[in-house]
Image 1 (cartoon, rainbow, N blue to C red):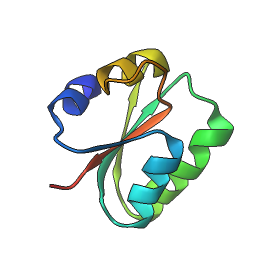
Image 2 (image 1 turned 135 degrees about the vertical axis):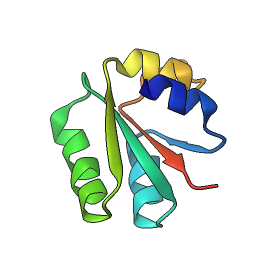
Image 3 (image 1 turned 135 degrees about the horizontal axis):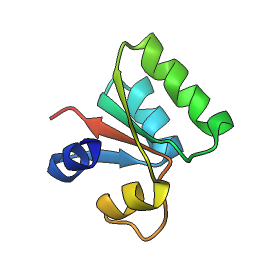
Image 4 (image 1 turned 180 degrees about the vertical axis):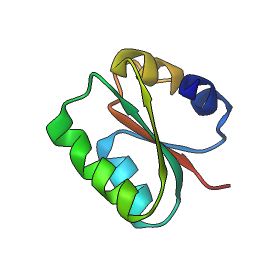
Length: 83
């Protein structure tokens, strides 16, 4: 389950802007996207991930993804960063 990967990750980039920045800087190892996030927002992350050949996983809930990341609001996307 992708929530487990997020919990176990030592370094994360949480949120759309931070995820995009991590991808562009080559720091992202894997991308996790909430299925209930706005597709217009996540499409750019999906495109960049595809360009960089990164694995993209999906989780059901923005709210739960945010909670797993330790924030009080939902998270549309999260990048698991390289060590």
